[in-house]
Each structure stands twice: as C-alpha cells, then as structure tokens.
Amino acid sequence: MGVMTRWLDPDEQRTWRAFLTASRALMDTLDRELQRDAGMPHAYYEILVRLSEAPGRRLRMSDLADATGSSRSRLSHAAARLEAAGWIRREDCPTDRRGQLAVLTDEGFATLAAAAPGHVEGVRRHLFDALSPAQVDQLRRISETLADHLTGSGPN
Amino acid sequence: MGVMTRWLDPDEQRTWRAFLTASRALMDTLDRELQRDAGMPHAYYEILVRLSEAPGRRLRMSDLADATGSSRSRLSHAAARLEAAGWIRREDCPTDRRGQLAVLTDEGFATLAAAAPGHVEGVRRHLFDALSPAQVDQLRRISETLADHLTGSGPN
DNA sequence: CGCCGATGGTTGAACGCTCAATTAAACCGC
DNA sequence: GCGGTTTAATTGAGCGTTCAACCATCGGCG
Figure (tube, rainbow over the protein chains, first blue to last red):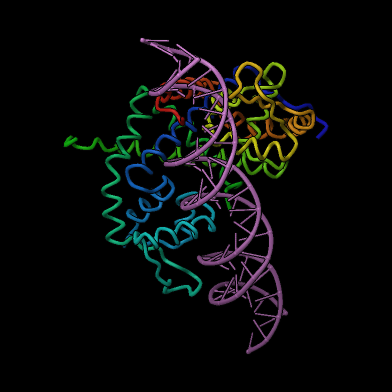
C-alpha cells in the first residue's frame, strides 16, 4: 500500500498477452474437440483419466478433487453428471463414514478408451508439434516452477 | 485413420500435466483475486482494458470479440452485464447500420483504474516473480508460437 | 464420556459460457 | 435494383462453475 505499482514493461506486457491468448486458444480448442468427439468437457475427461490410473479405478472424492485441481463443490457436481451418464458410480468409504469413493465403471472406461486417441492427437497437434524439443523442455520447467509457486493459495 | 495413436511419452506427459496444472492455477488465482477486489471476472476486466486502449475508448463489438479472443455471443452476453453495471454503453455504428460500438463509460474507466494496480501486482507476483528473465523470454516465444499455430481453428 | 473445532462432502442459487437459431443489414452479381 | 449470400449482433436454453450455507462425522481434549 502506498507503494507505486510496478507496471508491466512492454516486453512483459507482450509476454503476458501472448500467454493469455495461447493458453486460452489451446484450452478452448481441445475442449471443443473433446466435446464434439466424446460428448464431454475436458474437465470431465481429466476426472476419468485420474480414476483410470488409480488402484481399483477408485479414488476418494477429496483426492480426486486435488488431483484434478478442482474445488470439492465442482467435483461433487461433476460426479453427479458423470454418474448420471453411467461413467462413474459412488461407493461409501469403508474407513470413514463421511467419505465417498468415485469408481470408474466399465462403461466409463470404455468411453475413455474411445476418446483418448483423438484427444492425445489433439494435444500433439496443437501443442507439441508446434514446439521444438528445447521449447518443450523449457515449457516443462516453466510450468513446474509456476505450479510450485502457486501451491498454497490453491483453489480450496 | 487406422494409424496407431502417437501416445505421449513420459516426458511429454509430465510437460502436459504441469502445463495444465500451472495455467489453471494461475488463471484461477487471478480470476479469484479480481472477483474479490474488483467484483468482476478476468474476462470482463480484459474487455474494459481493450476498450480503454482504443481511440475514443470505443470499439466495434466484433473487433472487441477478436481482441479478447471470445465468441460474438459471449461478448454480447458480457456487454449486457457490463452495461447493466454502468461500465460500458452501446452506440449505433455510424458507418454500418448492423454495427454496435461498445463505449467505456467514465465510471467504467474509474473502476478499471481502481482495479488495475492490484491485478498487475497479481500478475507480477504469480507469474513474473517466479521466473528468471530467460524463462520469461522463453515463455513469450513459446506463447507466440502457439498462438500463431492455433489461429485458423479459432473460437468463432 | 461429552463437547468442539476441523474435515468430507453435498446442495441451491447466481453467474458465465456455449451452441444453435434468429433478425437485420451489407455486399455481390447480374 | 433484385435475389442470394455473407456478415453483425443478439437471444434463449442448457450446461458447468462458484460461492456460501449446510449436514454429518471425525479427532482431540478436558
């Protein structure tokens, strides 16, 4: 407070706007492709992916929320939709009566398996194919640094 | 079709997930800060910024949509809200009877001026302060490459 | 044991975005 | 200057997210 604002210089401005444009365009494109080809938004796809990788294809709601970087509320709503679609089912947690497990159904797994190749192709085409190997490496380091730096003021 | 999927190798996987986590966390954080401090989502802030930079603080709806990377429909809905808040006003375009101009009001400008320092500080803290100058430069090149690569399959 | 703050999860309302349909005016070719 | 196509912008329905409020259970501590 009282301190002068450290405005962005022209280079920073340019970087920030390019980042905004690029990440938005990338996400929008992948989201639209996934919606078109698999009938689900990217966020839901990610939930199914995480479940498919978990032992027993099941996870506690909270862990799933953390893994997908979403709020508990969001995941709760999403789980309701995914359950209605028959892609997941909920089970009571045996060790904590408050807890719920999200379980990937066979149908959910099949849907995911059908959607994955197209989505991966999209990620490749829109992201990796556009960058040099060095840039991919730079992007990884930058992203990991940022992710690290932002943890602690997370989504809830 | 019929071609084997080119799956992501472990490094690419790691890069992709780090990017997802980081960009989501960054956007969520800035969005939440802006909502808390200025009562508007980041998308609306961007609209006001673009208008403030335009000659006469006014832009055609289409140009504004392009500048902010949003669909016409989205901008139309957003403009309705911004107008209701008294931050912008609409005028008929003198040269094209179909056209509408979005005009930033004095009140809108004042709101933007009040919100800007806090937001810029946020961008600085959450993005630039975490990266080395070299990384900032890398991020700019990567983002510009991606933005370039994605144009043509844009939002509509 | 009995209370009390913390944790796990859900719910409903309000909001923003997407998609498809709609209206109106401009542009184009003849 | 008349039809047909394209472009500008809006609309409404449906979906996903957020936020705050809520209920239930857990864990600790006196």
